[in-house]
Image (cartoon, rainbow, N blue to C red; front, side):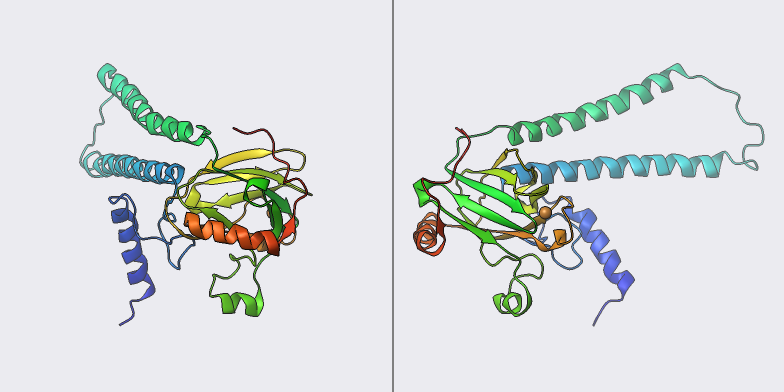
Amino acid sequence: MSRGFWGRAAALAATGILGTATAVSAAGVGQPVPWQMDLQRPVTEVATEIYNFHHLLNWIMLVIVLFVLALLIAVVVKFNETKNPTPSRTTHNTMLEVAWTIVPVLILVAIAIPSFRVLRTQLSDPKADLMVKVIGHAWYWSYEYPQDVGGFKFDANLLEGDDQVKSGQPKLLATDNEMVVPVNKIVKIQVTAADVMHSWAMPSFGFKIDAIPGRLNQFWFKADREGTYHGQCSELCGQRHAYMPITVRVVSEQAFQAWTAEAKTKFARTDGGAKFADAR
Ligand SMILES: [Cu+2]
């Protein structure tokens, strides 16, 4: 039996609210799913911290909204003209004023602590096991792997038409060549652009990073789950901005070795290895 629109919407809203109770609910893994209410399942430490922080904020907001709503209802019911014909002329209440200054400060402090924790993780900059250079082009991404894993580069274009249908990959999110990285390894990406500004964004990894011509941005991730993850360019970069998706395949160490061995022969060699900025 199919539920109507409102039934479905209500069920999803309930899932969304209840979903906040569990650390990780069953939203899309590596890609969005129809009627998704939650964030995509986080697969890195940074993404997990962002996810938990997001849910903590939702709970705090829910409590505040319900509290203010209760106050409003109390005002409407108890202090309307009929019930309360001669209103109080009180203008000051020191205790109340102290309380409504201190309580929000405490709430902000409580929010600041996990917020700074997320920042600390994001900016921790651990030693890289693998460096990959990511270059945004109008309108596709290209990837360069350093000499120690074979020294090659390739483009990743949108998988369209029959190719997309045959691949079984999601529409507008899959690419012909994928960025492949090993699981549980610290991968650092150095991101730049060849023409206009782009942004390399991967929801399951919990970050997006601007790709800016003439500049090198850097970020790291350590995916703790094998799988295929999809993202999109997130900087409005022109006519085909919506058609330059990002696909990352996280595989086992052995599968990664096998892939690099094949990639070395399949893709263009980089002479002397891709040029990487000094990174630890
Ligand atoms: Cu772009």
